[in-house]
Length: 42
Image 1 (tube, rainbow, N blue to C red):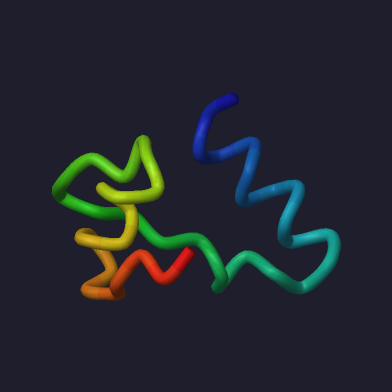
Image 2: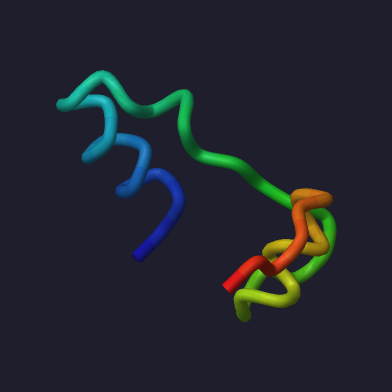
């Protein structure tokens, strides 16, 4: 699904501002935690 389709879908629910784009991969929990500077607590 393209980012534009996701934005359009989220916009229907007022959530388009929740989309975050990263310069690094966030494909796994560990990579997403590193990309957002959060720790993997589970």
